[in-house]
Image 1: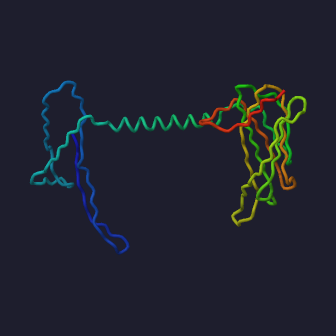
Image 2: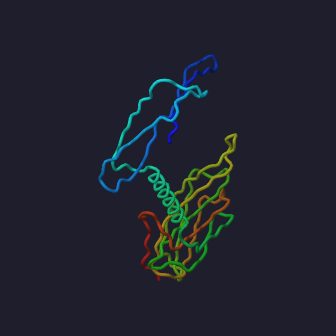
Length: 230
């Protein structure tokens, strides 16, 4: 059974007026015909009345459309939502992948530490976060250095980092934040020394170095490969 209806009226607001119309005339039925056969479809009008209950005289036309191989969109939307949720959880899993093997913060511009890390199947993700005060310039320089167990430099890089400023409601600069990440592949598992130096150092309040091991990514990434580590 399907209850169909039609309502209309007049609206008035702020000296303006108009008419409104709302209706629900559509109905449907899904069924599966296992064998090819003749099917009879019967429609009957149980009640035809106004909203106040007064019966309406006259006839009510019907328009019937029959489609083969129709798709039940209810299950289609359920499947779509399931795929979106699966994609979301997969994305979150990849973002949080990897084991944190080094995380060190100092209330200064320079940070360093040594850790046993690397291997032929271990992709590393290096993250540097810098916090500065209101006098921090728009750009700072990061000097990243990686040394092997004998103290030999095996990878050095200088990165120009843009700082994002946090302002008060009055527009005054309160602080600044910079973020840099890259992927590193140390083919030999060993003890390595990592250091980050920030220039200029005076306005820097905090520097954090984080390294994750065994990182997974959704797509291919560019990684620095160090194959001559001792």
